[in-house]
Length: 290
Ligand code: PMV
Image (cartoon, rainbow, N blue to C red; front, side, top):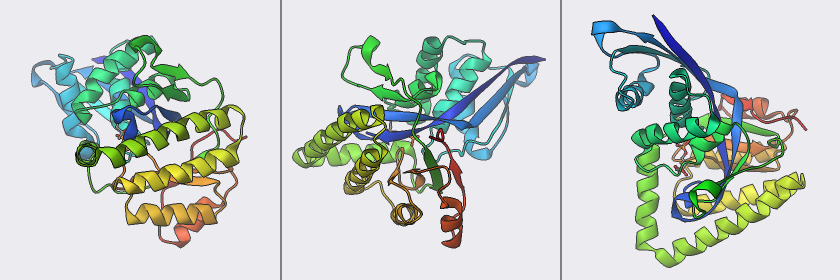
């Protein structure tokens, strides 16, 4: 017997990944053109059953158990790349919460955040928020709870996403960065401060439609992510190719160690052709054409 269905898009962090767990604000954009879809049905005495890609199994079953749903079959489908830095675990959490009948975006976010902690161990909350609200978001981790998420009232800039397989999980990547933060507090503190400034300048540039400036800030953010060790060689190559194809800026998005790169660039940019010629596949246009 069907119990419910739920769908959720992905997200791309424009500025502030990792540093958001160390006090910096961050800006994230919804990736609405791709989604995770779940359907729940009653499974009687057979307990929990999972039908979907192998890499989603453990976390999906853990989320259902956390919700006390122990006699359901869940089917997972959709076209959002999994484990690529595009918020698939948060999307899964949001889709499951929606499938249970919750629709108020604030309630969805709070419930999804609890589920997301299962996948990440220590999640900032920015993924759940941008996916629940489906709108560009400024996240201030140090603000009081009611004022942490500021919905940015402009459409997401035109951006592209490409990705490569990941060599480490979000949890591992977050733990490595935390080790660096503890070992080199002065150096790390300077990077948090630089990211805080990039977020603030980035917000201004986004509000005024200054995309060339946003692109420059993305490149600056990428150099900082490289300093904390989350950028892999294939990402350096992807960024270089993207800039050659006409992007205004390019950076790793999400936890890194592989996964997704985002490019700010027009819809007509020949990114697919340039990446394919260099042996990379998988890119898609994720933002609103301007
Ligand atoms: O790679 P993803 O999509 O899981 O994004 C993780 C973003 C981090 O800033 C590294 C962690 C977080 O919870 O904000």
